[in-house]
Image (tube, rainbow, N blue to C red; front, side, top):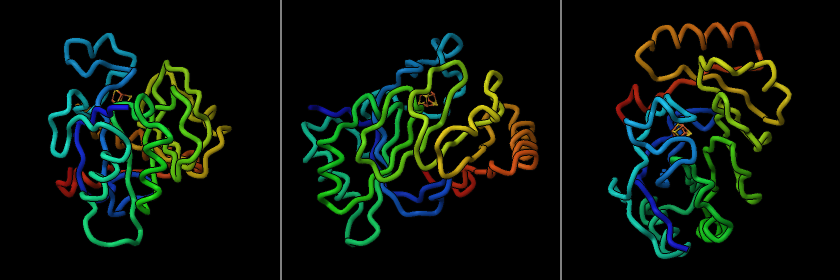
Length: 210
Ligand code: SF4
C-alpha cells in the first residue's frame, strides 16, 4: 500500500493525557468529514477544523511506498534512543490509511503507537493509545479507547450521553475559533459542572510548537 503523508515531524504532544511527551507526529493526508478546501467548509460535516491535511507537501511529508518505508521514516525522525518511543498518528482522518502492516512495522521498531481519530471508522485493534474526538452530527462507531477528547462547545453533542462510552479519560478542550474566550469559558464551565471531564489545553500552540 502507498501511504499519503501530509507531514512527519518530531515534537512534544501538546494535548490530552500524554501532553508533554516527546513524540513523532505522522499526519496522514485526507479526511472523511471535510475536503480541506475552504470553499467546502460551510457544507462539511466537520466545520471547525484547524489543521491543514491536504496534499503531501508538508515537512517530512510525501508518498511512502509501503509500511517498512514509512516506519523507517518515523524512526529517522525520532533519531537516537531506544526508550519511550512514541508515534502519534493523526490527520485528517488516520483510519482512512492506517493498517495493521504499519502498526506492526512501528512496533518492530519499538514505538508505542497512538492514534487521534474522529471515531467514524473502527480503529485497528493493536494500537497502544486510542484518542477519539467526536464531531456533532456524525455517527461515531469507535466508542471505546483511552481518551475521549471533546472539542467544545459543539451544538448537537450532549456530554452526558458520551459519559457512558468506554474511555479511561474524558477531556474537554476549548475550540480554537474566533470566539476563543467564550470557548474557554464554556470548557471550564463543563469541567466544573461534570467532574468526569478534565480540561485539556493546546499547549503546543502556547509554546509555538508545530
Ligand atoms: S474530523 Fe478532524 S481532521 Fe477531519 S475536518 Fe474535522 S477536525 Fe479536521
